[in-house]
Length: 370
Image (tube, rainbow, N blue to C red; front, side, top):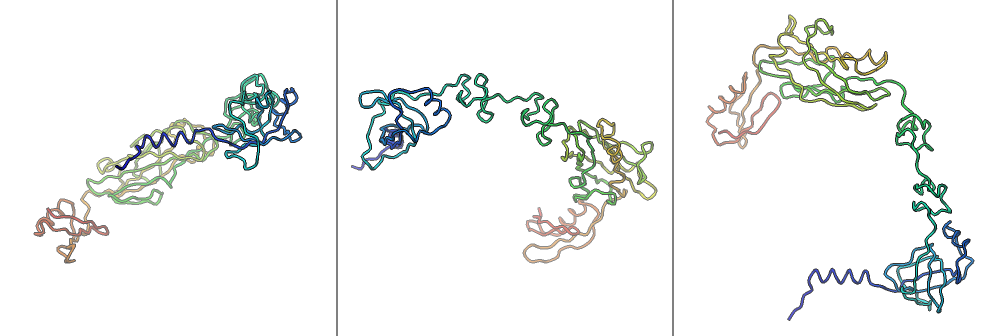
């Protein structure tokens, strides 16, 4: 009969073997039957004991003894002290002496009055808790800016580590970030600039993503950026109409913040057209002057005519072509003025159940005719 070992049993055996006591080779230096304070001080100060007699032992233990520590060991019917020069996980091949783990009486701990892990002999502040990286002394940060006083050029003034703990002098400077701002007109993404010009037909809308960048030397604080409409390419506060206020929170220096979901319909924009049917959108950054940007920063807050839209009072016409997917036959080619007209044309082609390619101007899509 075939016998199998359960997974639980296998894990137990592996764990037992891994944790079992075994002979491990150690090189130790004998310090004699008494431990002098000077020798303990030397060990705690990471000194070597190469001048002391060498002992090569196989110690039967689960884990090797800790390197560079002093152990109290019962050997040759008396208590002796040994400093561990080097420990290994395997036994030696020579005739070194073997001792059992029960002979290891204790590890001699270095005096550490404040229990910070740094022995008193190496602790510059033996009665104050502090990390070894600071020689056992507490890390002091008088201005609570995250930069320790010993690394802080301005220990009593808060400032970032990038400026050596000193406050950054200067002002914020908020501007429109054109790299991350864009408009969506008629399902097509458009860039935003003073030369942007697009047409908006009846029942269409423009959607926007607006990014504000802080190119100054200080965090901006909260601010409000506003979008205005007018019938002039130049912004004038007494003639432009507010369309929307957009709130921005703190923006760190050399960072930007993005606002999305901004949307204006044909109906919203049509009252502000000029004689040619054009409407101009303007941006005013930090409209309420909540942010101190200094003289130069305040002078670049207005982005005039970042978007010009020609408002049409009829629907958009586009070229439509309907092509069979498998036979490449053109079933329709012409101009339509609405999606409703397009759907009516396709439904009357007698192609129910077939898959066709619908080409609208320069875009195409696969469609199964219902």
